[in-house]
Length: 211
Image (tube, rainbow, N blue to C red; front, side):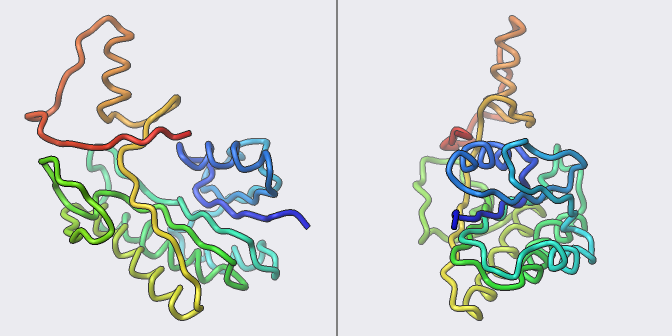
């Protein structure tokens, strides 16, 4: 029996890469809120918006009764230039995670949640962040993602499952849809223009390639 992996947010920047890579070895089930499948490589793909109250029941009707080997939960609403309210972010990121968990008929063998380095707040020096660093979410987005972490922690404890949380830094690579520093610098150089630094240039990040 092949290893079966469920990927949520499969139509996103990181999710598409995961589906393409993992489908070379595993059976992939994909969840996306977009109308089109993220990649033909997914064995099965369902369109479900986890920000909607009906999402848990929709998932339970579609997902198998047998446990997935791994669930990779990437589905989230990431605001562009602050264009999202706290209500929208909590609905998609915090409650969306709760609905995802409630939609599983049985707990998987492994569960991984893709959070954000933003839960640590504004870090403008060369401080090395690790799992022991204090969290201090200072934006609505970071608050909604950290709240989702706590939802997962409570759920995993109740089910005796050791979930893994990835607090990703700045992910970059081909097809990056954001206006963050690496894609914006590359676009400027490709257009024969000098890159423009926003702010004082004090923000330090460790970029992670999407691959």
